Image (cartoon, rainbow, N blue to C red; front, side, top):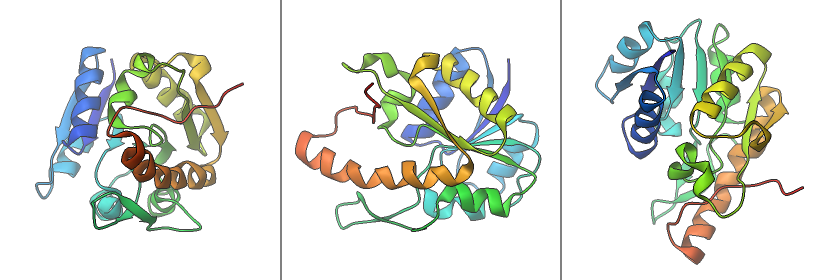
Length: 194
């Protein structure tokens, strides 16, 4: 059992918190109340950032000595509320977090899919891929184990390398509005076919 703080109680955070609790972890969920993130993270071994990416740096500024699982994408929304552009072109939210929080081990994952797939990958007709980006091998191994608790088979998880590789997966968010407009809001994920 791992103690986990999920920051964000929307669809993504709530979905992850429920699934991780079901898997036997001790989970605390923090909402947007001032100080809630710090309170939840204080005793957690792992912190999951499921907050809107545009405000993540501010919300996580006090985080130290944790594994931070970043599932957010920092985007500028278009008029329909869907992502229209990246806030950190030429970089990524994950890189910005790692730079701002040097004592925290940031691992980017689960940001290339709609939220229901994060905790139920086997429900898709084709095998999805969960990507890992991060500089700390031990932290990535811990996150890999969390993913298996969420139903991800180890062969569905691809380690892309260091934190700078999160640029590619975060840029994939720009596919999402087009897929939703063409196919509706149905669960989907990126997949590497071999």
